[in-house]
Amino acid sequence: MATKGIEESRRNFIRKAAAAGGLLATGLLNPFNAILYAVEKPTDPTKHWWGFGIDIEKCIGCGRCANACKEENNVPREPFYFRNWVEQYTIKNDGSVKVESPNGGIDGFVQTVPKEDIFKAFFVPKMCNHCYKSPCVQACPVGATYETPDGVVLVDETYCIGCRYCVQACPYGCRYIHPEKNTVDKCTLCYHRISKGKTTACVEVCPTQARIFGDLNDKNGELVKFLKEHTCLVLKPHLNTGSKLYYNGLNGEVR
Amino acid sequence: MPPQLKTLIPLFGAFIVLFLIARHFLVPVSFGELGHYRFNSIAENKEKAMNYAGKDACADCHDDKAAQLKSDVHSGLSCETCHGPGQAHTENPETVKLNKPDQRSFCGNCHSMNASRPKFMVQIELKEHNPDKKCIECHNPHQPWQLKE
Image (tube, rainbow over all chains, first blue to last red):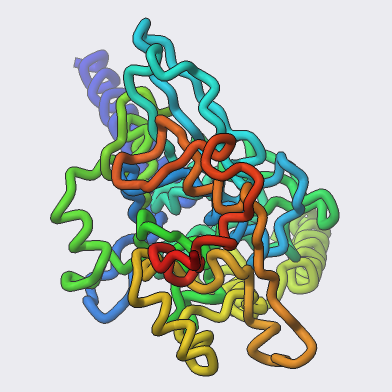
């Protein structure tokens, strides 16, 4: 009888300890659960939830978007600092893929592969995907990069310590360290323009309307119309980043 | 109360007060108001200066050129696509002038022959299509198919 009593009390003790431990663990770990604390699409239809669309079938590879971005946001002119850029994809008949982006496409593209060897060739403009479960935001150790309530990933220049964690965390390669400020810099979706009712600089200059900026929360908006009319995909969907940059005509070879 | 607590409680109290004072000075204003970031940073990002004025701003003064542009295949282009950022020009139209690119290579950014470009794009071989002339000697960039000669 005595042993049974001890067994029962031990069982009870383990039960209680496990419950208390579980509660403590969830309580302590919750603040680190970035998915739980990621911003969500506002349910109020009057609130903005900015997104972006790119129509690869319309892109002519003129590189004006990459140039305009540098002019608008004072991005250094050196050919390795970009907030947005254009890549030329050439799929050859033998199945190999050639990707080029000389100076981000600002000086124009030249097709170096002979025409008879080309199976398919197209341009892919790249920029920040403004993910709502951003790997870069989760990586920042000081809270210098964040998602605004309207779904734009921004950088707090005065608070960034330039540790480069976010540069590594971004699966799309959309961040760089500004050589003068020594802080990270990235596409802000022209936040200073869109909050004044203007469109972004890259959309403003695109000659073929291959770039669509809009509000995903606006059911009658231009971007929602674009998504309804086309079969759109995001880059690297398996990473579950919550990308809000939608491509029409995205080939499987695009990384 | 045990004597150990009598000495430890004030010590711990002092540590907590020091921590709160340090925290007050180290955590920036508005941090954590909406999330793990400085809320004021949103407003700072909004305040940055614009360099591109937008097509409507150009049409306010240059309505003749805007009408020309609208009448031909370049109607989808913004003025600033070719002329560059124009905000400074709208503020000081006399002193700040925009560039008028006339090099063949500039037109070639869109119109040089490249298999990657979509089929709807009008493309020429830059080296073969009147190589010693500037594009704008024949084509008015605002109305490309109204040939000058």
